[in-house]
Length: 206
Image (cartoon, rainbow, N blue to C red; front, side, top):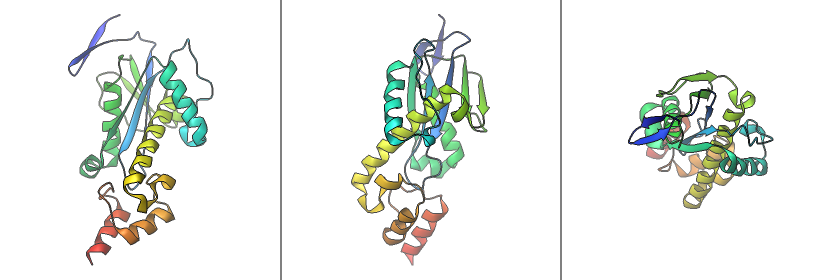
């Protein structure tokens, strides 16, 4: 097996038939980081029930996330913080998180399959696949890891900011969240480049 230089690390490069799936979680919320995951599955240890994370129950997602971490050849989760989202926009921040996830893998795949329309800048070939989280097992696995990791962080943030109800909506613009923004204004973990958050800030300044 050959090796490949990734930053300061030298890691094994997998044969041509090994691919990684990449997906993000958290582009739509008004608060919190955007997460991404990269997964290389082991064909000899298949995982039953992989699907788009949004179509799975919380219990099923958690079960499958544990299976993926245990049985995948390699996996990594990364994120782009709120400050980065506000600085470079949510699309670019999502691609940045994806690049970080791929670069954090302990193995270098021959190709990365990315959910959606756009590919991050990678040192390996990559392809964007629309609705890949529903059609490619590796991307489904990545969507599950990204979603469960982000949800876990939002539950932790709920302990710091209970007034916003992050445990219920995970930062998405629900009626509950918008009402909390109206009452309390924006917190340090809100995305100030997003319109509802901007409006909440302006209201507090009046």
